[in-house]
Image 1: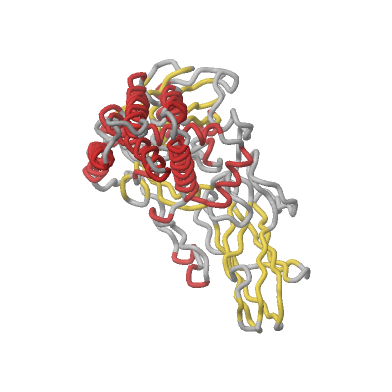
Image 2: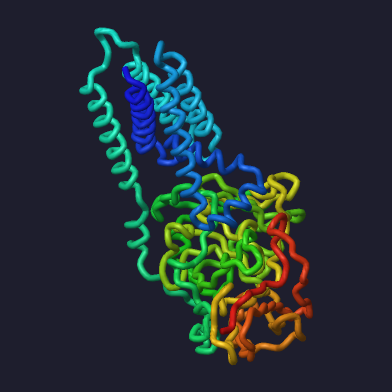
Length: 494
């Protein structure tokens, strides 16, 4: 057997293994697919600096980069296993087995998967090793023919397609569409026409759902049907409560305009968006359960096992207006933004306030439970820091000399933005014109016009919030509780 044939045999064994595991996972839980489970484990085990680098470098494409990198590693390893099996198949089979065992370990340790889910990676392991031994045995009378290679290829393709088809039947899209329009009993006030300066280069005040930032650890979007969903509220409460989607859907719903920010947002970053969220007051649910003295955090769990800890004081604060949200910008939550339900807590970074696909709420203490990011060294309380950004001109843009328009956005959720200033080429700070404030929990746009001579120019911006605090110049990274520093842009006037 040629070296090329041995490489191909190893890769085909890999394809057969992944396809078989994917097919079995489709009957149990799509998250048990070994490829996805190993990817999820890789995310959990990745050191914080590397995670921060991935989000900063690849943005919302970080998961695709991870899966693509895994694919390259697996194909190279499978091809190497084939090459090492020139004399006997066992060295290569051992490599295949090691990767198979990694899949078993990944699925077995996923907190959201039942024990039976290990059948998927076990199937992958057995099929991978079996196919490898058949295709990579030494050249004897029983040596596999070209037909055997084609049969394995066809079988892997059919298994993968069948698994994908079965997985698609569990798609929650139809369930979301059946919910229909969500009409709040208490609607948010209309957005004033001058709430943004979109014609001058700022974002629109309300972020369309398709453009709303998304940062989470889910490699595949959880598919939860509204009719299957329920929420458990328990822990340090007088009365454990359970809610179905219908229970919440039939309540008088409230709509609030809220700007959300990710803690991974670098200075000048775009992980900040605004929407009209519709849902149920979280404080109402907590009052119904009766929070006991000594409670400190609302420990929330997503259907995929991700966890978050929200300060109980923030969740109960009616002036803050935390929601168990069902809708977003007039429609049910998009699947990728948490359908059927998620938390939205104004003024706190998303990792402590905005659990998507939420299925469990436990009232507890900080010492008793540690959430996903708290275990990894991130901050406990996580109030959003006052920040501002320049959107126009873009970095290194060329503009006509003379009058140059500058515009951007600032945010200081739950405090409010009172002032945004700019500084051109190290000169004095100059005021800008602010848009109409919608609420203290939303961002605020700004713009101004300056006159510049031909050449290269640098502009900084800074915001002052309603408490009197002005952004610090000190540059601090996102870890452990949000970035600080003045954003700047450099442009060329010609």
